[in-house]
Length: 591
Image (cartoon, rainbow, N blue to C red; front, top):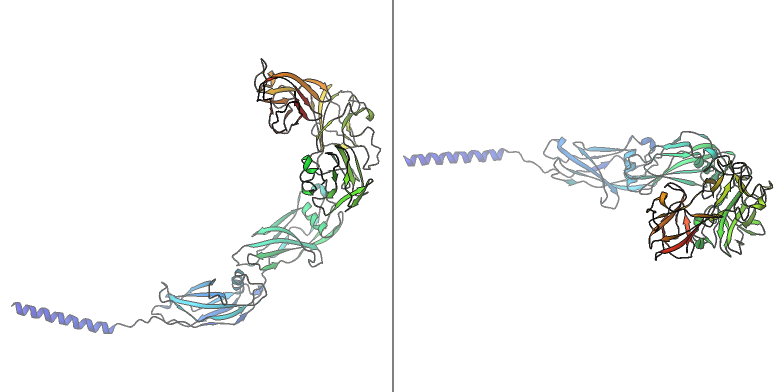
């Protein structure tokens, strides 16, 4: 029985084996596919902006005969500059189809990304890599060479206005805004834009440029900025002329394109001219580097009618033997020297002073005259002790000159009459010449802009001593400040006196005024502590801080300042000292 069973099992196994062999012989054979052959619709193409959205070239290839539905065929077209073996290839992928095309803009952007110059033919290598959708069985085709010439794809420039009237009082207001479309559409890198301009009709023979930046498409301009383009393009101040503008676009690889030209008619104005005083004195007086216009102090513009942009002046301390020139702008491009009161452009002769002191230097660029004289300022008028008689002003009613274009003075004023400040011992004669006296007044209160050789300052609200500051440090707005000067206190934590609290104005001792801006006090001081001067019994009053760098020297005048600084240091040894504050010389001394 067992033998019969074993025979049956053997027979069944033979049957299965025979059947399986017959099924393998019936399966189909799956081929691995073949390398495709690539062809191009043209061997050379020169697209134009009109071809931006039009197909200008197409590539086709043969069937790779993969053993799958054609929708699963994957093709990657590769392009690169010839001879680089596709090291920096650009690719375009398609599925199922055996053709791909490029519009004029697509092919142009590809070449621009390579840095090819506009209008210069370049040979490009093209090939296609075929595979299954899962990237298996990849094959690389033959290489087709195509000559392609990149075209100019410029931005389109427009403006909010084609006619502009510029004026000095409204120079900071918006005048127009330029806008432009993107250049080289489809390009993937940065594009830097510049706004260029030149006199109309000159075909940009003398180009001037205004930087804009990368990937920016607008440029707003004030009247002052537009006025500058007009002046730079040969439109004289106060005249009307036309200026051509265009946009220059540059890719990161150096391709350049220019927009259309947009013309603007401009009514210009005479701009503000600025003058500076470079010389041998600069380093020694804290005015920058010697003979360096970029760091030299600026002269004040005389804003009277007929003198605007012509007359300039400065009050400045100069050491003995100082030499200097005057420059228009912060360069040597336009400079003046001279002798005998006559200015000469580009003169080898320097202006100079023989003795140290504060000077008033005046120039007139129209008459080419200059004047150098003692620089001073004082109080004159019925409201002052000098009366309306300039010879009475100096020295008893003089002000101190602590810095360039800055005067400070204390004087008694009365409510019966107005007053002025004056820089000479005689009245101005109406000549508007460089050597004429300058007197100053203002109809406004403290903080107002002052007027040269004009009206008076108003009367004070009550009789008493006042502190007055003539401040020309901002050359665009010379002003004055005035406040009561009834007291001066010594405050700090360095006072060794019963009943005086540290840094407590109400309990701090008052100094004695001895005239001509001088205050004194004899008092016990602690060692190595701090003090300062306060013109009132509460914080917020006018005060003076140290400008000497923390000096503790006895008997030596220390510079002071009122616009922020450190505290004065008391002596290294405690004791009784006399402290002197001189507001005219802007110094403090401890003896």
